[in-house]
Structures are given as structure tokens and as C-alpha cells.
Amino acid sequence: MNKLEEILQANRNFVSHLPEAYVNYTEAGKIPKRHLAIFTCMDTRLVEFLEPAMGIKRGEVKVIKNAGNSVTGPFEATIRSLVVGIFELGVNEIIVIGHKDCGMSNTSSRTLIKKMLDRGISYEAIQMIEKELEDWVDHFHHPVDNVKMVVQKIRTNPLIPKDVPVHGLLFNPHTGELEVVVEGYLK
Image (cartoon, rainbow, N blue to C red; front, side):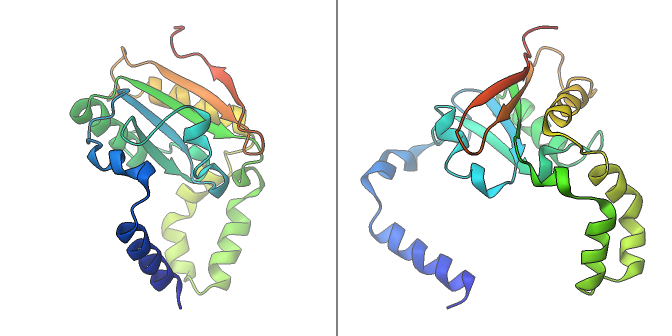
């Protein structure tokens, strides 16, 4: 059985035996009850760990994820998602959450490009994105510094209203502990 078949089989089992804990969740709306957007990393250790560690349940927040919780431009995918969250879905507060032991700290554009070439990605294709790749990957050095930088990029983005607090936190994927890096209520 391949990965897709495994997922579809698990889904059939889930739907036919919907756990009692999820019965009330089926009515969750599109508008986040806490009017909060969380922007974090796609690290697998955060799945089913970060939200419970924050006391967050289904339907309460919008969660946006990417590698290293990075923002690379003024209207890239994360900013677009935040704009929709704010202006269409009632988000009025943002929390950027980095985490300890982030894999992006150990990645470089050179090693990533080598792995891409080894897997058959053409050098011409890499040349098209090489500068952007360097700007993204090679500027990530430490999760705390990254959180501060991303909070600043979001706060100063002309598409994000100035009355939206932007906080920065650091999550420990081993213990579940959160540390405040940037307190968004302070100007």
C-alpha cells in the first residue's frame, strides 16, 4: 500500500468511526473564534503538540506554516494569507512562533542546490530561483533572530494594519514550553 492509499484508508476508518471527541468539532466555522493567526514552522514535531500546548482547539485560530516560519517578500504567500485572515476572516492579532532545534539553522542554499541537482532538477531551473533561495535560506541563522526579523517584517508591512499586535514566541518541541521573544502589545 502506498502513502496515498494508507491515508485514504485511514480516512475511511476515521469517518466511519468518528471519534466522540470530534463530533462537536464538525461544526467549526471559517472565522477563528479567537480572531488569531499563528504563523509557525512546518516541523513535524509541532503537529498535535503546538496547538494543545497553547490551549488552542479546532476552529479557534488560523494556522499558517512554512519552512522556518520565514517571510521573504512584501506580498509572498504568508503575507497574502495574513491579509485574507485580517480583512476577510476577522483576525486581529498575529503570533509568529519559531522553535528550538529548527532544521533551517543547519541548511544552506549550497547544500540545498546540490541535493536538488542530485535529484535531477536542472541547473537552468535552479538559476531562475538561486538568488531568492540564497536570500531565504542563507539568512536563517538562529530561531530567535528569525522570529524577531519576521515579526518586524510583518509589523512594517504596509498591508498589515498598525492596530494588529504581532507577537513572537519560541517553542520547545521537546517540552512544549513557550518563551516570549517579542511582546506585540508593546510598541
